[in-house]
Image (cartoon, rainbow, N blue to C red; front, side, top):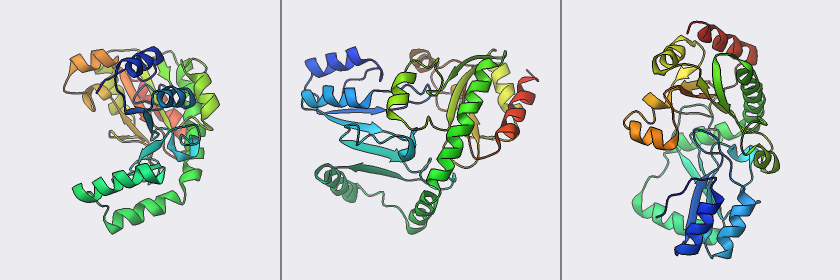
Length: 264
């Protein structure tokens, strides 16, 4: 395989021109910086070279982004996140043309990994409120991102709903909402960021997202704890925080963030 930075279209074109590419797989928005890929553009680039496009649309949710309509051949979601929405089940799904999904289904039957009945029930239950939850999370996350961007103790905010985001124009054109995850960098070092995480009271300290409960984590000691070299490559600083907004009241969350920032 060939690995490229997701938003680097020149690198994608070079990979397509110089390799026998059968599939391009990417997230949009990406984790944790929420970079956005122009799905229609990338679809045309891949299809012109005979390659398929598979989009991981988990961070957008099926409510905010219709990747198949924009030209993707397949879409995958971690159903653990927005689809189930209650931080209590593990599952996933893939959507696309029957001729493609059926191949995945056959392989899936061979290797296993079948959902148990209770997990299936929990996902179906969660889907009933998916649109309500995501609409709430979209609204609260945008307000939180706008608030954080103006706060003197925040160095930088990453959220596709902000005009300062490098792919804000792409997000506006292909998403109906910008999702419930806001990433930001505290104006401080590793220890002050860790203390901030400890001081917040409402969000749970965990590495997931998309549920009813807000979740906050410091990637440097969660997802990327084992390799500073990898963190440096990906630009994940010690002061980076990923904040998954739940369905709590915005003012409650904001006040909690403020009191935690005031202590560092």
